Image 1 (tube, rainbow, N blue to C red):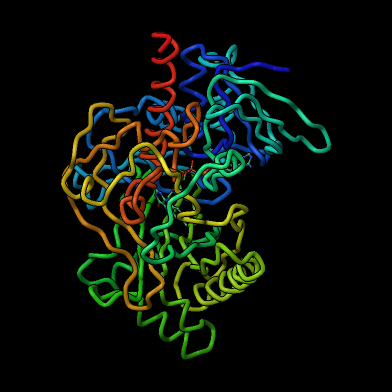
Image 2 (image 1 turned 120 degrees about the vertical axis):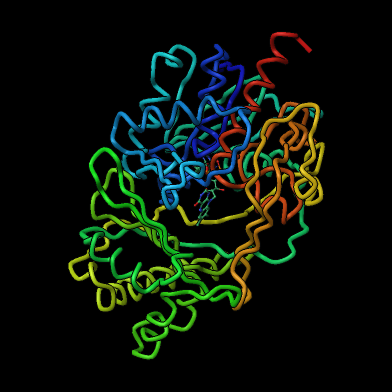
Length: 433
Ligand SMILES: Cc1cc2nc3c(=O)[nH]c(=O)nc-3n(C[C@H](O)[C@H](O)[C@H](O)COP(=O)(O)OP(=O)(O)OC[C@H]3O[C@@H](n4cnc5c(N)ncnc54)[C@H](O)[C@@H]3O)c2cc1C
């Protein structure tokens, strides 16, 4: 049986950060991913902008490596809101190129002697002894692969490793986060569309534009939602789309688009929303089918109504459904909303951030709730299983109350968690504790 120091299940946003950091520090590491590419929601889910969240330099080495590597592929953009240099976000990435970039990073000289990657592999069985996982039986096609390890990390987002290990999960959902099925449209005349949207958005509070200093390319973001706290400049056009029966009323609930780094004329849609039926696979599948229909409606609408979209084509639909929250593990410390709001510090933090509470609720007149606060920290104990001594989680599986989770789940924070878990494991190894 092959033996590792650390096995990470899930090669997505947080799993890659964890694997890179473990292997870079010479821990014998295995990264297991069920798809044939890395990145999870960053790539397969087409989540293109990494929200600017970090306010301190805590576990950001992997993030910096990602940005530095993406720059070499011309797949990164530093977005500066209204040319205010204090709000630059260097985390606008290209989702397709990111598949290549992540493989470049995870096979680089930094890690290649310590890291094995298994694609198209899933977990079949967990073998436990008392409160420890001893080994896993993995499944590649029809092959069963027994794997032994000292530590295990569940970075699946859906908690499959923890579930098979019979761990407990949190169940305090105030509402169910709405999911999304993102898609990408190409062949857009961004100059024309941006002029149109800036003219429509008189006070410019929804739309932001920025030019790439290197090639003068125009980048933008704009949105329209159903919440009544803001005047959404594009809403009158969406209403017109409903009147013309191109759109359904529900399509107005959340509409958001971003241009994409290193992809001239491409636009990423953070919509349509689809429902959340965690306990009902048949209903969830119908939602995914309805999501594709909504994509076609939105596409038909933008090509008919928005200058610059006349010759647009749909070029990708996310292959990983945009589930904002699936399971949250019962961890040694359950992170609280109050910890976040009060900006609490902890003795062993893995993450320092200031991204606010962001719940995509299913109520029609409210889209997200965002509390702006000072920096908060997340302790390592919120990533340690309360049930299994050698099991950690990273990313959106974090053991946090529902509303605190909605802040912690952004990509940069997920990467800090992955890196923080790796460093904690490393310290345990070196001290032998
Ligand atoms: C629609 C949507 C929009 C978002 N927008 C933003 C945004 O603009 N900015 C931002 O910063 N954040 C955004 N987020 C949040 C952020 O993208 C996610 O919370 C974060 O990427 C989750 O990272 P993760 O590592 O937990 O999961 P993932 O990135 O999903 O990684 C999980 C990985 O595990 C793999 N896996 C699952 N099960 C198994 C198994 N059994 N065996 C092997 N592998 C398995 C999956 O294939 C995947 O690669 C958004 C999220 C959604 C859903």
